[in-house]
Every structure is written in C-alpha cells, then in structure tokens.
Length: 275
Picture 1 (cartoon, rainbow, N blue to C red):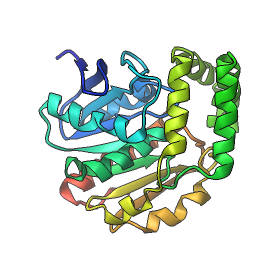
Picture 2: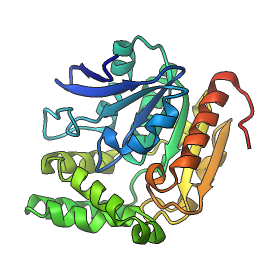
Picture 3: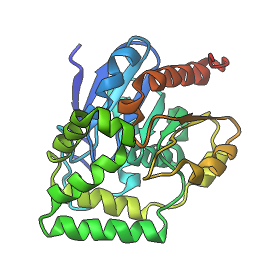
Picture 4: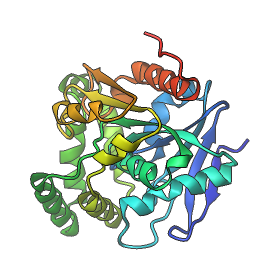
C-alpha cells in the first residue's frame, strides 16, 4: 500500500495524508509550525497496532493552502474528507497543540466521526488577550521578513531545558522543517488560532473519552491552565509528563506511544488502560 494519499475538498485543492499500519483508526493531527512529519518518532510503534491517518495540514508538507486565510473550523473539515477517502467510518483523534484545536472543532462539527480525542499540549480555552498580543507581534515580524528570526526564537521554547541541552539536533530539525512552511501559511494559522472560540462546552458534551497529555515544563500551554478542563468530560484521563515541555512525541515518545495505544484500546473496548 502506498502510504501517501492525495485528496481534494471544496476548501483545499490538494491535501496529502499518510495511511500507515493496520488496526483501529487513529488520526494524528500535527501542531504549529510543523507538518505530518512531526509524528515520525512514534509512527513505527503505533502502526503495529493502529491504522494511522496522518495529514499534512494545508500549507504544510505536500498539502496546499489555496487562500491567504483559513479557520480552525475549515481545517477541521479535513477529518471527514480523509475518513471518506480512506473508507473508514470513524476514528480516534490525537491532536497536538493547534491540532488539538482542530480536533475539538471536529468534535463539535462531526461528533459521530470521533471515538476518542487525545489533546496533546492543547486546550479547549480560547487565546487570552495577552496571548493574542504576542501572536500579533509575531505576525508583524513575519510580515517584515523575519520568519527565520521568529522560528529560531520560538521553536526552542517548545522543548524542556534538559532536552534542549541533550538533543540540540532535534531542535535544529524542527526549525528546518518549519522553514519549509510559507510565511503566508504561518500567518494564516496564527490568525485562525486567535479567532477560535472557547470549546470547553465541547468537552462537557463529548460522548467519547478525552485524554489530556500535559508537559510539566510547557511554557506554551502551562499544565496548570488545563487542569480544570480535565474534570469536565464524563470520561477523561490526564497524563503529566515530567520530562516534557510542548513536544512529547519527541521528548518522551515511549510513554506517549504507550498512552495513546492504551487510550485507543479503551475508546474501542472500554477496557481499563494498563498501568
């Protein structure tokens, strides 16, 4: 089977996603600023047990962003499009950061398509005013040609201090991957994130389990800001990773793989996760 799949939707003329492995379907939605390659460290293990559906969001990897603006809701529309193309009725979703926002929007718009939602270093809350101010400053910098400066400054902050010291090559890899994304796409994503609504109510209404993966050293979405959300859903799990900041699929891939597989197993069979 060719893992690389090409589709189109009304909103996006060229979307690329990978289909890898066999078993229950798990869609992995990457965050900002990355592509589907973000999940490479965990693909081999997860694909032994799951059918992985890994999109490149429009404007990243091999997918095109056809317009200067998009929205989290529009991006969420790729989920049912991919499932239809793959011949799969529903799936579990793991969304990282912005991918979590997209997963939450999909849970609101297409709840019948989702068996479980794992939010990795993400939140159902909207941007704070302070966060919006920071994003607007970054947009201004990118507009002025400062994309490389923006990425060189922001990407190291996604990782825990000890990890940065031990694995400088991982940070450089993420910067180089992010540099392949056009500035117009980076700006479109930031605007989409700023405009997203509060979706805590989506957690409250969810008929499927929710899992929160939090990093103890996360500066982008501090775990303390998410803890209250973990009590909202009827069925929820919370995992706090002591050696991670915002990038557990790189920083603590082994434990993340285990937690995702246990979560998928629970969502499908309502079995107690292994400890």
